[in-house]
Amino acid sequence: MLLHLNHILTAEEVRGARALLGEDAPWVDGRSSAGAQALGQKQNQQLAQDSTAAAELQQLVLGALQRNLLFFSATLPKKIFNPLFNRYSGDTNHYGPHVDGAVLRSHHPAQWVRSDISCTLFLSDPAEYDGGELVIRAPQGTQCVKLAAGDMVVYSGSSVHSVEPVTRGQRLASFFWIESMIRSPEQRNLLFDLDMNLLKLRQQYGESTETTALTGCYHNLLRQWADT
Ligand code: NI
Image 1 (cartoon, helix red, strand yellow):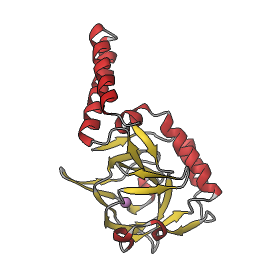
Image 2 (cartoon, protein in one colour):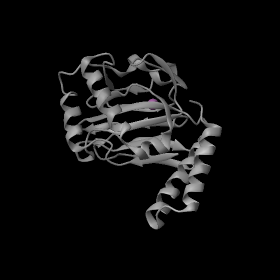
Image 3 (cartoon, helix red, strand yellow):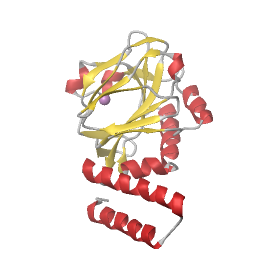
Image 4 (cartoon, protein in one colour):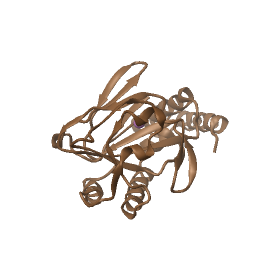
């Protein structure tokens, strides 16, 4: 699974987020939150997770996710790790190939989150920096992702991934994980496929006995598989 979600944040929200991620923001060494395998690969900076700036930014991102129906349908979230924020620039400009921990400790609220799905929300425009591609190694092939500010990629939490060195400018982003109500990627993808096609059927032909019945199938599958 790899999905590009457009305009998670509005241009105004991106500006607001970036105002809180300036030079005077409480940046710390990104290695403070890395697991053993990732530790040697990680060379970036992160916003102190318990700072007031982070609290404000977390609310901004979580609020934006809440209004995005495509995000909800694709991920069917049970828990969302409190969004984290990072910066790649200068000497701390890359993150080599690594895997994220399977179970991670979120602070707000304090809880364990299984990393079924990884999310990266881009906060810098691609024209502002060179390099910094998010490289995701998937069974179908390797994908290089570099999106417009405000756009987000969601991908399988089980993927080996890396961030290429930023050789000019700076790359700001938010990243976090989702524990889905649907643990199986196959079941989750099937539900997403069904939901998206139902949406298109409705747009094309309006509501009918068949779309109502198929919506019932969607919810009955969700009811069978969801862990809430
Ligand atoms: Ni990672």
